[in-house]
Amino acid sequence: MGAVIDRTSADAGATPASADAVPVAPTRRRPRAARRARAVSLVQKVVALLVALLIWHVFARTGGSAAGVPTPAELVETGSDMVTTGDYWSAVGNTLSSALIGFALSVLIGVPIGLLNGSFPAMERSTRFVIDFGRTIPGVAILPVVLLLFGSNRSMVLILVMFSAVWPILVQATYAAQQLSPQMRQVATSFRLSRTSRIRDIYFPSALPFLMTGLRISATISLLITISSEFLGGAPGLGQRLYSTLTVNDNDRMFVYVVTAALLGVALNWVLVAAQRRVLWWHPSEREKNR
Amino acid sequence: MSTSMSMVRRVLWELWLPVLLVAIWWFASANSTNFYFPPLADIMDEFVDIWFFEGIRTEIWPSVQRLALGFGIAVVAGVVLGMLLGVVDWLDNAVRPIVEFLRATPGVAILPVMVLLLGLGTSMKVGIIALVATWPILLNTIDGVRSVEPVLRQVAASHRLKLSHRIRFIILPNAAPQIFAGARTALAISVVAMVISEMVGTPGGIGYFILDAQRSFNTVAMWTGIIALGILGYLLNKLFALVEGRALSWHRGMTAHNNGGK
Image 1 (spheres, each protein chain N blue to C red):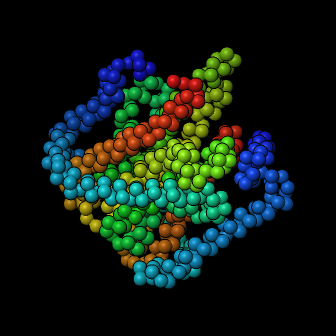
Image 2: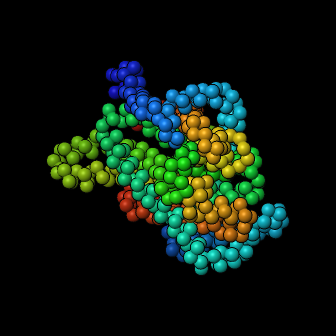
Image 3: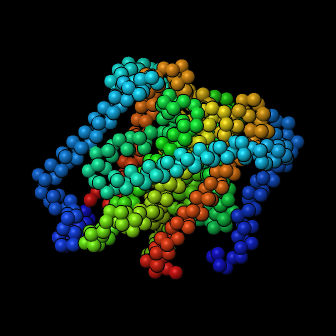
């Protein structure tokens, strides 16, 4: 597949019309040139990162010093002290487990309802307004109610996470059930596929891309709302640490928690992208990337 | 389906469940003495008193202004930077890890940094909205710019179109659907950021109103605030859909045409 695409773009590059816009394909044919291109790309990335760190350092020494922004070196120093403490890891663990449990509960609720919704038009029409309304309410709006009912603990966090993360999964599962093309249905009928084969070979693969989209959005929201509700509601975890270090002006530690939260987000995203590539390798959206 | 079904029937189909749910809430809470769930009738009385129109002017309008400013900054920054990165390949390649890192960072984690740098006032609230809303728009713009068909690029090159014309007639129209998709995601995050920043920052705005009502144990007022915020979120989304529908009507027509439809 990749070879075919490469050739077409190389052919296009050979036409005189785009003499100045030579595509990258020709360089890819020779392994040495490809290696060089990769090295250049890596150098570009490293330089950009160094420039960003330099800007940060200069800012921390000049404009940010009044606010107490640590330099990257100071941050690493504080961070390396903190990562050896159990206290730090308990905050990370609390946030991670709350986000994962909340996400799992959202999937358990959202997928069945969404699939049912997509399969029965009458149900979809009846619930349309409720779902439309529910997903546009910012999840943190109900934080005060949940805080009153449950207090500053994990239940509060989980309720908020579910209330925010269930909608994307539900909506995507609805699409998934709706978008099964009539041709595929007809193919299944004319080949007289058995029920299991229908589900395994037709329904499941065609639903999967939509479900994956929903899962990715919901997982990101789960982490965001977990940290938000810890921050605002005081449940134990990274969010609560961010709040407490902010209020006592413990900037060095606060920045370590900020970077930790960011790294959690990056790791989550990385896992989701990898999972999507694994289960959707056959889908056009993924094949494009492997060119 | 919609042609065979009259408008009235469609509306009835969509409305029976919400009406039923509200009715259940209304009657179930009618004689409620539960402190946390006051009767809906009381909430509605209070709702009219608080929000029409004093509350809209003093709480919601400032919130919406900050949201509009922050979101507007994000749209401009996201589209301009996205076009730059979409056109200049080496730059995109170089800063991609940094962009991905910032994009994946949960917005609240940046909030303490913004508070540290900008304080608790309006600039922090607008700043955090702008910051979290920029990334979805930026990344979608890059993808949109990249998705311009090679043939169109070649046509532009062979006609030696000026850069400004290329942007206006080729890149921007092609990327517009993607940009709107990004902006829609960004709007949802912006509203969350608006509420959180108000809950943390200086008094004022609907987020502050709700949290303040909860802290002073005024549950009726708190419920009116939550309902108002829900309606605001819904209306903002509808408004966005309206703008998107207008701006992209040509695109929908074109795709329908290309697919052999209407």
